[in-house]
Length: 344
Image (tube, one colour):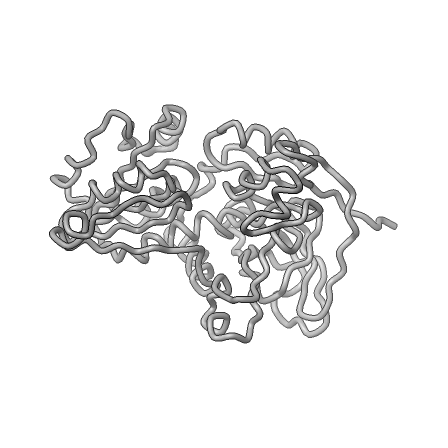
């Protein structure tokens, strides 16, 4: 009888290895998930480039023995005591912040702001292993029409993109400027197109711009050679900043029209804002957003089905777990699109 599962671990700085981990067993309120897809995210690279000592002493410390991969989708293999939903056999994606379930923010569905939240891949095992234990309340059921790879993407980046559009309060037919054409930026473009918005984007990378064009987004410009202030004439009602780059953040303020809204999504270093010319004189609204609530993730899944939102083209690589080390290395070297560890 098998007593272990295969798992990826950060072996050392800039290297991932495949190891054997203990076979999970569900406790009260938990489920065991047969993982079918685990997306790689920029935050995974943050730790990939650290030594074990740096991981343990980071702002958000993690154990080197913790399996990476917080973007998780799969099939419920077994349930623990007290679990009434989901059921064995259900296809699910997992909200990666798991709150206490009883505090005010958790009762509103905002586990991400729970003071006692645990995060898959950070302080509890992530999805880059054959099976993983998850808290049942974190599971969002996926319809058959949504692939596991897209389900994993919805567990983080794709729903983050959806919420950014919702937080912007852009009206139908409005123009959205997206700063950055990485996976989250491409997801914003995909949502915007599906929701009837005019979307344009900027990115300094020719590879990213070429890939965006390949999957149908032709209005993607070189941010190094483009006067973003001219976009005001095209009425950039909303700017969604996904790069986290200082220059990208400044460009977001320069590209938004009077009365427009800027939503900051990308994590990165700070930058200076002059309230008078940047905000007051143009009556610009700034909004920040971080992850999303469980109800909003459920809404995003429904919207994918309702509007036939096709996020699969953003996913450029699905590697099996044995090829995980190479997938991480290529991701770290700047591969375009979304990389997923997948199981048949």
